[in-house]
Length: 304
Image (cartoon, rainbow, N blue to C red; front, side):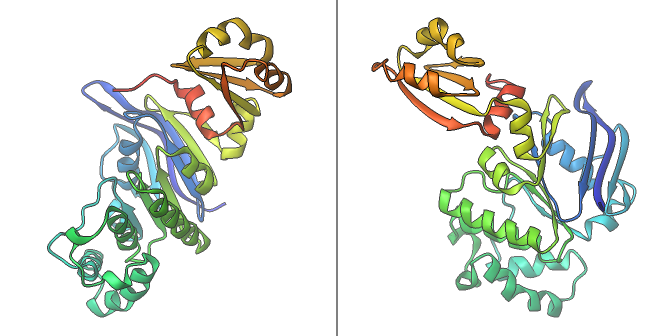
């Protein structure tokens, strides 16, 4: 495989607190790789280290065959970035934002202008090419930020929570566009808090917590490795009491969070039969998913 992003024993601390603690990673050309973790896990710092925007305390980073941060500027000419927060220029139109951004890569205006129609079509913004940024919806701004990241025809795109705050229609359109990008052979490095997004888009992913990568594989493999195949969520006012008295008889493992008991089972039949007799309880039977893995490995407690 052709590795285009790599990190070996990457470390970064602030005020004596390890934010990135011994990260090892290798991402291959044409792969969508996800980086998941709670707030404060070190995801954004890891992205900055891989881009050469932050110098590591120790460790080695490679980006498109270049040593980072020493040769980061040359490597970033072949990289696109979708930041966590949109930073479009409100004084320019949609098309002008693309034009000005392309100049940062040393591209000539005729070259950029030749790419703009395809980028606007990609973002479904052709009809908005002359609109100013404040008139756009949140979904339009996000699609424009994605199109802007492609203006230099990059080999790698870094995406930091690209669909946060968007409605379902906008999210699905961006997912479709990201699939198209990977089909073109480009490499994506994606951070997200949406587990369904990671399951749909990522060929492989890593779960990060407290600055360390604690699990790494394909979404399907992680689910198979860490979670029983079926989950029954039992909820209602008496779910916690019911779980303490009965869940261990039917489930390989269970957790109670608020008014919901999560029962992890290999065979849900006996539990569903039992619940059918408990009319005071409601339940949901579903296959295990990536969110179950994430919560098992990082915990259900809120992080501040």
